[in-house]
Image (tube, rainbow, N blue to C red; front, side):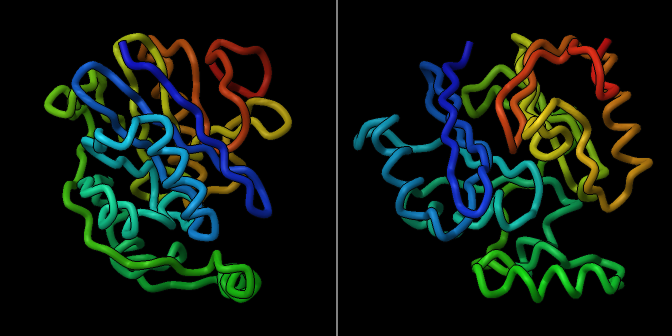
Amino acid sequence: MAHITLLTLHYLFSVNCYLLTTDEGTILIDTGPAPRRQELSERIVDTMGPSRGLRLIILTHGHTDHCGNCASLRESLLAPIAIHAGDAGKVQHGDMFWREEGRQSIATAVARKMLFPVGLSTFDRFDPDLLLVDGQHLGEYGLDARVLHLPGHTPGSLGVLTSSGDLFCGDLFTNTKTPEPNSMAEDKPSLRASVERLRRYEVDTVYPGHGKPFPFAVHGGGIGG
């Protein structure tokens, strides 16, 4: 069983990163926004100790607030970066709004312009070291868990489900006010299908990208039940 350390970073809004530590090493899930780079690095080292390194950095999706520090952390901690192929283009371009088909809505253009002054429009681009696939087991990295492809928020959104029922879901769910499926989605039907798919698994606790962890079988919001 992994020991879970929640690292919440605050910059305009709160973003969660998670350190999962076992006897075989530590995995980091998501890396927060670049303006909190130094804080994150210090908290990771404080948690692991200076003599230990990360086995793997897993990105739940390719948005700036979740992968803004990946390039820096790979250089400083020598940790490989893993993401689903569906979002690889976003990190390779350093642009959370990048889409393979190239279309850009008016809303996207406005959001890009608004986020630029606060450093959240783009981030340091990088090539991922590993492309994760649905059902992939993470045992070789010391974690008894599997990868679940959970598209909707983005095409390559994924979750990590441990054998003990802990689901690290990125932005599939949020819990800023109440636990609920994310209202922001590039493909809302796919997001609804991803939520429904989770009913087939033994999910105990959901660890979202924003807000506090919560039990999956909560009432309301269309979750669990």
